[in-house]
Length: 358
Image (cartoon, rainbow, N blue to C red; front, side, top):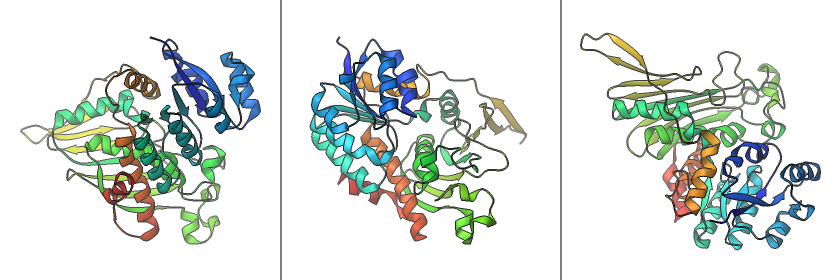
């Protein structure tokens, strides 16, 4: 079987992880045909690292797609630049593996969905959080405990210093939801095994709400909304609560250390920053019993599972769980959350989905 050729769109920042860690385990199945980045210094450095000729390095994404023969593209750029790359890939009939979220606006998400579906290409969206040992173990515990009643997810980081979360994340609108909430809302869908039916709540900046950023220390490190609190009603009748905070001064539950509690008919499954999944249940005497759940190991951990699933799919394997057709649900929940906050109302998420898929 010949290697599949990849156009890598974006090679700085997060893309370094893809080039150095996520793709190398599959070097027998893929190779880089071209790299694209607006930063010439980063582009040249990555090209030298991979041993690519200058003719395979592009600062113009359109030129790269016009000149290079490839089988698929991998998009690791800020969300505002996803749509152009997706449309170029679809025009060339190239399959797509893209970082989350699908795009920076709901209109762009809808356009991408329709373009991908009409072109017939395959598109996988990265939701690597589903494939960590801690979450796979939590899923096993939930399955043991029976029907889910509700789930709680907490994310909290201390990014009170500007630039500590990467400069652009301190500037973009609805930064917590777009850069973090998309993971957490997808995870709540995963744990509840359902889509989001309705969502209500707010994202905010405590300083901005008071009209004076000086009244809440650290809030001026963000131009927009670093905090969020939402209630989700799921399509299977379960509920979920999401708490997000990028201004945490106390206990943090930061990246890959989020707190989850899933209340089920047979007990509760919990996961905290110690990465230990515990089951809480009561015996016949009413005494609370707590036991730890042995870890579940994936074939590949986290981000590395995404290229594995993608390449398997391209070779005729099963459709991955976070393919575009499914992941549009997580993006719909995220943009509905934004609208819920802006309008002080409860939003029908499935009406959002119909805008994309109808």
